[in-house]
Length: 257
Image (cartoon, rainbow, N blue to C red; front, side, top):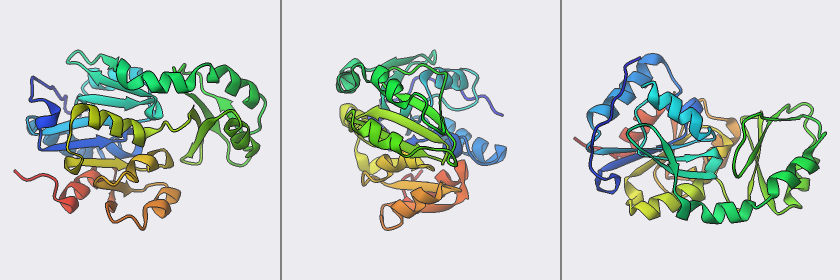
């Protein structure tokens, strides 16, 4: 895969187009050629194209793939299913933006300890080994899953998201990809009409519903497709992953040379 370098570019608010994209199944989805086509296009137009990763992945993963040159370096990152809001410098360091995360930290408090306690021993859930600051994530076995876990977490005043029929996330109340992305866009003074939001699973629903130009790429989780079917601003792409993003840029007419 082509290595992608990023040099000094205009401020993201001054760029004509911003892509805010999920990673797995979306920006990282599709064939090698399809991904290379999108990534090389972004690199060639970096003076005009801003990039924000909006993902369930942790900052360490994002640092690693950007450092290796597997993907173009994002300008900003909304990670950990919306519980991390950060900038990314030219050394690929992810730096949380304290003023944007303050409410998230307060909403989480010591919820991790309480949530682990009430979920301990619940069928169909296995706590992931990655340590997150303001969330818990479990691998879920849909055949064994005890749906009482959802009510147990709600009783703690927290939110849950089930995605891709195999992940169970516990989040601070009202925190997810959509609200955190909107907070970042407002902070950066970016015109929402110039932003394309892209995703493929239920943990992307909150950002696809915001009213910004959006795409559910080909191969998206069926539950997500059903939820956005009546939203005119969401394009249901036929093409998978990176190619679906390209399809949506053309569909929404978001970038002209």
